[in-house]
Length: 431
Image 1 (spheres, rainbow, N blue to C red):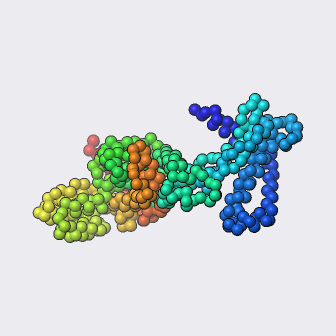
Image 2: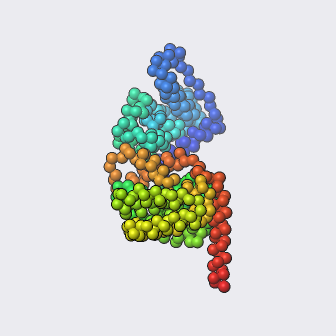
Image 3: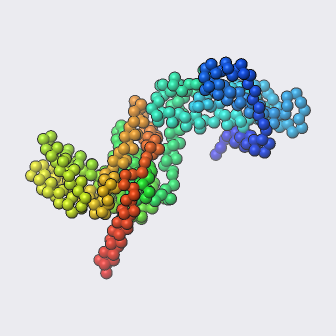
């Protein structure tokens, strides 16, 4: 429920907009050449900033004239009368700059707000400017010294910048988490987690049928457990993502991810386990002298184009590892078939390399780490979510189409045929 002052602000802005559209008065600003030359001594930017402040004053005075009439003259349509001046501020390039404004009082002695002044004071541009600069690596400590353009500007101290960033990042994450997904046509969804402090941030990223990438959502948890991942997928479902559509799900290999995806998508889900994670998990079991050789054999197997050839190579390696290190062999065997899903679907080479691992989302996480490099201390609350969400939005701005996107129609056709064959086989089994 809006408070009274918020209603009055909105009403004042609406009245000002009507003045601009219906009466459209002319505003003329006259600057003596000597003043212009003096301002230019400090650069064109200084001239434009000072001229902008003077223009704001003229706009406010025009609105005052419209509400209170000409000074010292009778005005039948007068809605308010002048009541002196007071100090205020406007927001320019993320800075609060002092200005003076005329006060108005209505006939019943209430304060009459100026719609133009309310627009000049809007906090959204300030918060957006703070968010953008913080995402580019500017710290709160150095913010004021770097961005200050006006000698008497304020609101750019460390604490003020921090407050504005919190509000801006909170709004950005809210928009990210409320995006409607019903119109998205996705051929693949990648789900992976990244550790922050003692938390695990799980992120979902979609690849469209045209190759474009979109951040779908994030969820914070202690680990990559099925409850957390299920909650993330449940949110995507509520926002319109259709899980009945045949789609490839590229996962980092965790059992929790596999369980949650199967629960939501069922037989429509084609699960591809990340080959990079599989290599890492297998090699981590081995002593140092065997790591390079096993890593090379894994890479060779996953580089093959044919499913049967790749599977035979992996089975040979599994047999070798049973004699060398049974733990490494069991790690390779677990979920081995799901590391070859893109081969079974006969996905062409370029697209297969893209969709055989979670590198696409790992690349986005690397941008998140760069964005978060100035954070020295992680606190409780929504700080981690705000920073990770903001970092993913920055990454999204840099996204390009996935390598091999022209081959996506072949992937879609293969998945449709596979679902059709599963359906026929199921009906035959029932009969």
